[in-house]
Length: 499
Image 1 (cartoon, rainbow, N blue to C red):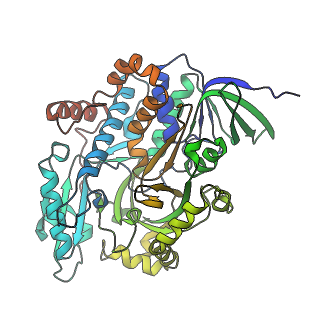
Image 2 (cartoon, helix red, strand yellow; image 1 turned 60 degrees about the vertical axis):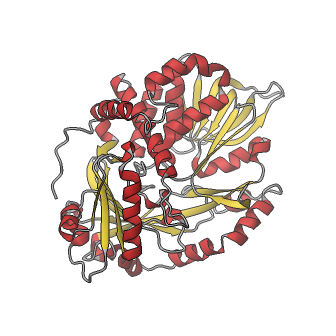
Image 3 (tube, rainbow, N blue to C red; image 1 turned 90 degrees about the vertical axis):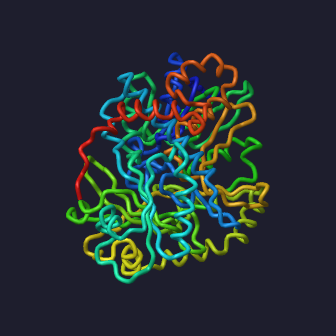
């Protein structure tokens, strides 16, 4: 008996911020297209996009020191910081468009203004931060950045961090007031509500178990309806795999050549969350430090003011860990199941290269709560264990692939893999992830629908005015866009929260 397939134009796998963003863009560009979404959990934004599964959101490279590495000659490389900042600007523009078009409302439910700061200790690190400040402060994207080594100014900026600090170790910080805190869980839910109003069919408790190509060039997607305990079969011209850590298995199922020699390394994380509101109110910033020597980029310690469920929260972390699961709700067999004959050598090469990372993760796993408190006390000298709870963050699957840097290179970042004909695309990897969702999804649209891009260009420009333009090189346009996005997203004229 032949299988009956339901046909649609686009299938989005996973109800996270990436699918929400791509679906929202496509609905504006091609309103008549039929889009179906399949999510194995019972609601949107519950895995990688969830607000409790990531800490330092709103990545715009204003304070993250791992985006500005120091070169061997002592100078600071700001290329990555510029790139990430430009990409975050695109996200803000698209969200503004949705608000101004009355497609979504109440932006304060997902974005709030918050100063972004970098904080370092020790002579070498102070020297690095000063160089970083000098390299960034002349750039219009980082306009308004301040630098200080003055203890009194630091007390004013960071009362909780400076209180009870002993010793005379050099300490310095930068501050920029144009930073934001983004609740990507809330944004994902808002975007999916909007999509359902636009007749996008969102199927929760539906797990995709296979994707294969049919003779007519379309993709056949086998879906398990978890509630109805039955199999469904769907066909689409284009499939986007945005299923967090589960994307790797589904990409491998497609069998496209681009899925070969790609592996994944799962990393879990923990955060400390302050349960004492008096302490929470004494801090108002996202503060990023410098990763310890030998620690990977995803381990940069940060003390973050967050807005979750319209309440001010304070998070510190991350503490890395290891679990073989590719999702929090995944299976302990995920890692083993991802090993294929075509990626075995790639994974083994990475294992040999990344012994330091393995050792670091084992050390992190063995930390006691008292040892975690000691790390927190480097930021908050007076921190008490009873004021902090431990939260398990989301699983991240770092991409391992063969690159010019050699076989089995661990990629720290967001990675998109598309079929040569653009009929399927998968999103893998981690930070800066959600913050750059709009740029990443527009790139997928360019790559996967090249025949439509010219026709769509005016609409893309309406939604994201600076797409394809360097804002750094067009400071007047940057000012204009900053003013309009800040107004639309309610980032101006907010009453400051006094410490």
